[in-house]
Amino acid sequence: MRITVALSAFVLSVGILYGAVTPNPAGGFTSVQSVALPGTPEQTFDVMTGEIGAWWDHSFTEKPHSLRIEPWPGGKFIEEFDDKGNGALHATVIYAERGKRLRYDGPLGLSGRALNCVVTYDYAAQGDSTMVKVTVEMSGQIDEEWANSVDGVWHHFLVEALQPYVEKNRK
Image (cartoon, rainbow, N blue to C red; front, side, top):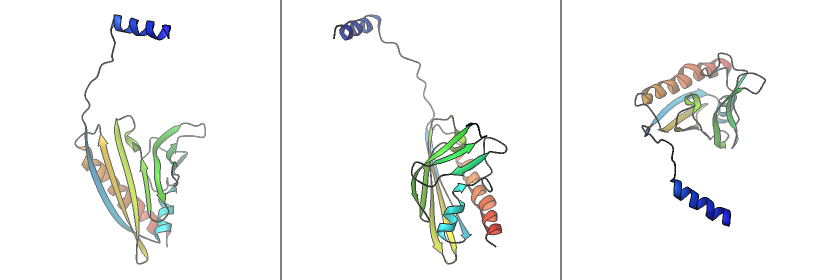
Protein backbone atom coordinates (compact mmCIF):
# COMPACT_ATOMS: atom_id res chain seq x y z
CA MET A 1 0.00 0.00 0.00
CA ARG A 2 2.80 2.42 0.93
CA ILE A 3 4.61 1.71 -2.35
CA THR A 4 1.44 2.39 -4.39
CA VAL A 5 0.81 5.70 -2.58
CA ALA A 6 4.46 6.72 -2.97
CA LEU A 7 4.49 5.82 -6.67
CA SER A 8 1.24 7.73 -7.27
CA ALA A 9 2.65 10.81 -5.50
CA PHE A 10 5.81 10.59 -7.62
CA VAL A 11 3.89 10.33 -10.93
CA LEU A 12 1.70 13.29 -9.97
CA SER A 13 4.70 15.38 -8.96
CA VAL A 14 6.66 14.84 -12.21
CA GLY A 15 3.70 14.80 -14.55
CA ILE A 16 2.52 12.07 -16.86
CA LEU A 17 4.47 11.54 -20.07
CA TYR A 18 2.70 10.44 -23.24
CA GLY A 19 3.95 9.31 -26.64
CA ALA A 20 3.30 11.30 -29.78
CA VAL A 21 -0.09 10.77 -31.37
CA THR A 22 -0.72 11.45 -35.04
CA PRO A 23 -3.99 10.90 -36.89
CA ASN A 24 -4.20 8.13 -39.49
CA PRO A 25 -6.47 8.47 -42.49
CA ALA A 26 -9.42 6.13 -42.02
CA GLY A 27 -11.88 4.88 -44.56
CA GLY A 28 -13.36 1.75 -45.93
CA PHE A 29 -15.04 -0.03 -48.83
CA THR A 30 -16.73 -3.26 -49.86
CA SER A 31 -15.91 -5.27 -52.99
CA VAL A 32 -18.15 -8.09 -54.25
CA GLN A 33 -17.10 -10.53 -56.97
CA SER A 34 -18.91 -13.64 -58.25
CA VAL A 35 -17.97 -16.52 -60.50
CA ALA A 36 -19.65 -19.79 -61.55
CA LEU A 37 -17.36 -22.81 -61.25
CA PRO A 38 -17.99 -26.41 -62.33
CA GLY A 39 -18.59 -28.81 -59.45
CA THR A 40 -20.54 -29.03 -56.22
CA PRO A 41 -20.30 -26.42 -53.45
CA GLU A 42 -18.28 -28.90 -51.36
CA GLN A 43 -15.81 -29.56 -54.21
CA THR A 44 -15.46 -25.83 -54.80
CA PHE A 45 -14.96 -25.14 -51.08
CA ASP A 46 -12.24 -27.80 -51.02
CA VAL A 47 -10.32 -26.35 -53.99
CA MET A 48 -10.50 -22.85 -52.43
CA THR A 49 -9.05 -24.11 -49.12
CA GLY A 50 -6.18 -26.36 -48.12
CA GLU A 51 -3.08 -25.91 -50.28
CA ILE A 52 -3.99 -23.07 -52.69
CA GLY A 53 -0.59 -22.24 -54.18
CA ALA A 54 -1.56 -23.81 -57.53
CA TRP A 55 -3.95 -20.95 -58.28
CA TRP A 56 -3.37 -18.18 -55.69
CA ASP A 57 -0.51 -16.21 -57.19
CA HIS A 58 0.02 -13.31 -54.77
CA SER A 59 2.58 -14.01 -52.06
CA PHE A 60 5.44 -12.39 -50.19
CA THR A 61 7.95 -14.85 -51.65
CA GLU A 62 8.40 -15.90 -55.26
CA LYS A 63 7.97 -19.61 -54.50
CA PRO A 64 6.36 -20.21 -51.09
CA HIS A 65 7.13 -23.49 -49.37
CA SER A 66 3.39 -23.66 -48.57
CA LEU A 67 0.41 -21.38 -49.12
CA ARG A 68 -2.77 -22.66 -47.52
CA ILE A 69 -6.07 -21.89 -45.86
CA GLU A 70 -6.97 -24.16 -42.97
CA PRO A 71 -10.79 -24.40 -43.28
CA TRP A 72 -11.86 -24.43 -39.63
CA PRO A 73 -12.48 -21.73 -37.01
CA GLY A 74 -9.08 -20.52 -35.82
CA GLY A 75 -7.41 -21.97 -38.93
CA LYS A 76 -4.70 -19.96 -40.61
CA PHE A 77 -4.38 -18.47 -44.06
CA ILE A 78 -0.64 -18.85 -43.98
CA GLU A 79 2.33 -18.54 -46.27
CA GLU A 80 5.38 -20.50 -45.22
CA PHE A 81 8.58 -19.21 -46.81
CA ASP A 82 10.63 -22.30 -45.94
CA ASP A 83 10.69 -25.28 -43.58
CA LYS A 84 12.42 -23.26 -40.83
CA GLY A 85 9.31 -21.46 -39.53
CA ASN A 86 9.68 -18.24 -41.55
CA GLY A 87 6.49 -16.93 -43.11
CA ALA A 88 3.45 -14.69 -42.91
CA LEU A 89 0.01 -15.08 -41.39
CA HIS A 90 -2.31 -13.52 -43.97
CA ALA A 91 -5.55 -14.07 -42.04
CA THR A 92 -7.37 -16.20 -39.47
CA VAL A 93 -10.49 -18.20 -40.30
CA ILE A 94 -13.41 -16.94 -38.19
CA TYR A 95 -16.25 -18.98 -39.76
CA ALA A 96 -16.24 -22.23 -41.72
CA GLU A 97 -19.15 -24.29 -43.00
CA ARG A 98 -17.99 -26.60 -45.80
CA GLY A 99 -19.79 -25.96 -49.06
CA LYS A 100 -21.71 -22.99 -47.65
CA ARG A 101 -19.45 -20.27 -46.26
CA LEU A 102 -15.88 -19.47 -45.34
CA ARG A 103 -14.86 -16.22 -43.66
CA TYR A 104 -11.45 -15.00 -42.59
CA ASP A 105 -10.09 -11.83 -41.04
CA GLY A 106 -6.61 -10.42 -41.60
CA PRO A 107 -4.48 -8.00 -43.59
CA LEU A 108 -3.66 -10.44 -46.42
CA GLY A 109 -0.92 -8.73 -48.48
CA LEU A 110 -1.37 -5.40 -46.69
CA SER A 111 0.46 -6.49 -43.55
CA GLY A 112 1.84 -3.57 -41.57
CA ARG A 113 -1.14 -1.24 -42.07
CA ALA A 114 -3.71 -0.43 -39.38
CA LEU A 115 -6.67 -2.00 -41.12
CA ASN A 116 -9.35 -4.62 -40.83
CA CYS A 117 -10.12 -6.88 -43.79
CA VAL A 118 -12.88 -9.50 -43.63
CA VAL A 119 -13.30 -11.81 -46.63
CA THR A 120 -16.37 -14.03 -47.02
CA TYR A 121 -16.80 -16.82 -49.57
CA ASP A 122 -20.46 -17.86 -50.08
CA TYR A 123 -21.21 -21.01 -52.11
CA ALA A 124 -24.54 -21.82 -53.82
CA ALA A 125 -25.37 -24.77 -56.07
CA GLN A 126 -26.44 -23.76 -59.55
CA GLY A 127 -27.22 -26.86 -61.62
CA ASP A 128 -23.97 -28.81 -61.93
CA SER A 129 -21.94 -25.71 -61.04
CA THR A 130 -21.40 -23.58 -57.96
CA MET A 131 -21.84 -19.83 -57.77
CA VAL A 132 -19.10 -18.40 -55.55
CA LYS A 133 -19.63 -14.90 -54.19
CA VAL A 134 -16.65 -13.25 -52.52
CA THR A 135 -17.28 -10.20 -50.35
CA VAL A 136 -14.25 -8.21 -49.19
CA GLU A 137 -14.89 -5.58 -46.51
CA MET A 138 -11.97 -3.35 -45.63
CA SER A 139 -11.71 -0.51 -43.16
CA GLY A 140 -9.01 1.46 -41.40
CA GLN A 141 -5.82 3.08 -42.67
CA ILE A 142 -6.64 2.80 -46.36
CA ASP A 143 -5.58 4.87 -49.33
CA GLU A 144 -8.52 6.03 -51.45
CA GLU A 145 -7.31 4.38 -54.64
CA TRP A 146 -7.15 0.93 -52.99
CA ALA A 147 -10.84 0.17 -53.59
CA ASN A 148 -10.40 -0.24 -57.35
CA SER A 149 -7.07 -2.05 -56.95
CA VAL A 150 -8.45 -4.52 -54.41
CA ASP A 151 -11.55 -5.09 -56.56
CA GLY A 152 -9.29 -5.80 -59.55
CA VAL A 153 -7.11 -8.20 -57.55
CA TRP A 154 -10.14 -10.23 -56.45
CA HIS A 155 -11.41 -10.30 -60.04
CA HIS A 156 -7.98 -11.66 -60.99
CA PHE A 157 -8.07 -14.34 -58.27
CA LEU A 158 -11.55 -15.58 -59.19
CA VAL A 159 -11.83 -15.13 -62.97
CA GLU A 160 -8.24 -15.18 -64.21
CA ALA A 161 -6.63 -17.64 -61.77
CA LEU A 162 -9.20 -19.86 -59.99
CA GLN A 163 -11.74 -20.34 -62.78
CA PRO A 164 -9.23 -21.63 -65.39
CA TYR A 165 -7.55 -23.79 -62.73
CA VAL A 166 -10.86 -25.42 -61.73
CA GLU A 167 -12.04 -25.85 -65.34
CA LYS A 168 -8.72 -27.47 -66.34
CA ASN A 169 -8.68 -29.85 -63.36
CA ARG A 170 -12.37 -30.87 -63.46
CA LYS A 171 -12.18 -32.38 -66.97
